[in-house]
Amino acid sequence: MKQHPAKASYDILGAGPAGLCLAIQLRRAFPQARLRVIEQNSPDATFGFGVVFSDGALDFLGRDDPELLRLITPEMERWQDMMLDHPDRSLVIDGIGFAAIGRLRLLTLLQTRARQLDIEIFYNQRLENLAQLDGDLLVGADGINSLVRLSDPAGFESQTGQFSNRFAWFGVAMGFPQLTQTFRQIERGGQRLSLNAHHYRYAETGGAAHSTFIVETDAASFAALDLEAMDEAASARLCAEIFAETLEGRPLLTNKSNWRRFPRLWCNKWVSGHKVLIGDAAHAAHFSVGSGTRLAFEDAIALTKSLQDADTLADGLEHFQQTRPPVAAKIVAAADKSASWYDQFDQHLKLSPLAFAEAYITRSGRVDRQRLAAFSPKFAAQIEMR
Ligand SMILES: Cc1cc2nc3c(=O)[nH]c(=O)nc-3n(C[C@H](O)[C@H](O)[C@H](O)COP(=O)(O)OP(=O)(O)OC[C@H]3O[C@@H](n4cnc5c(N)ncnc54)[C@H](O)[C@@H]3O)c2cc1C
Image (cartoon, rainbow, N blue to C red; front, side):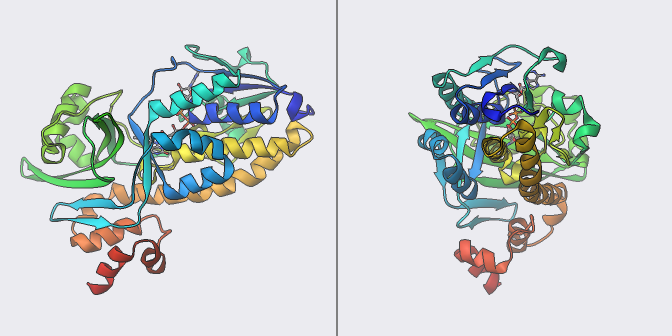
């Protein structure tokens, strides 16, 4: 670990947003370093559909890596307001700016940039054992089930768990005007069941509009609908039936759209010996705050900066450990609060639409009345007049 970062060799496991962003950053910072990225999938494979970035996330990116922001901006769908579709009434919350891009499109843009920089990426190589890697630094950018993390849980002091709701990540060939949360309650066998869809467009090319459509439900509703027993196609059909009005009768598209519970994950240590974790390998941020990809980029940028300012790998890693996790922890804590709110959304639906919307917008604990009035004046005025 005494090597100078500019002369070290780097093995990066995973060519998702974290791994590709890091490879690009490192190549620019250290043109002479040996760098390779190993990825189990082919370049055109991915899970899910589009991802969103908040305006705040894009501001960070613009400051830290304007080139990356310039690369992805022309490909993004954008909107300024969001819609909460409560079963009794729809409400617009102004000033909640988001931008979205297809996950595969994002990866393709990063891959192109990596190729232009002559970065070696080895696709279709699933690593089962870290002994095959001999780089001075081994970066675990290998996602939520990280082999690098699982190989050393004590070293990374990982804490894991799960939220209780079930979700499946679908898509649909239509464009919604803005990011919308559609809450539905249906009766089945005398039981009231609650479901929510998080949906937003991420592509509108040549009229071929596409949107993400994540369906989420509580454990009791999941069991009552017997979703566990259904295959991907059957559960997509059932969800399309339940949300038929929102989908205007269109089918839901699938892409590894299996039902899951969102994981809780936080590592106290992101560095253990010559191994370092970034992105989902180190932490999980619930999709409702749209920050997982942003955190992956920011981790990669922060790691590169720490190494650039250091004389040895050890010093750079120590600086990264001291400075980056405390910043990420704030976003992960807000995301955890948001996920806990969703775990109880059937209870929140007992509130009036306006009270429900206020509970929604303040759910992560980062927005008070004053802040709300500043970024969302029209919605805040409705709350004040209640
Ligand atoms: C339903 C859902 C919706 C989401 N929506 C958003 C959103 O709107 N906005 C947002 O910012 N984030 C969102 N996220 C989170 C976002 O997808 C992740 O935070 C982001 O992909 C993390 O990037 P990563 O590179 O750390 O991990 P990943 O994207 O998971 O990439 C890890 C890579 O490592 C590879 N890999 C793993 N193990 C091995 C191995 N042993 N050998 C070789 N390769 C390996 C994998 O194939 C993968 O390509 C969402 C997540 C979910 C589940």
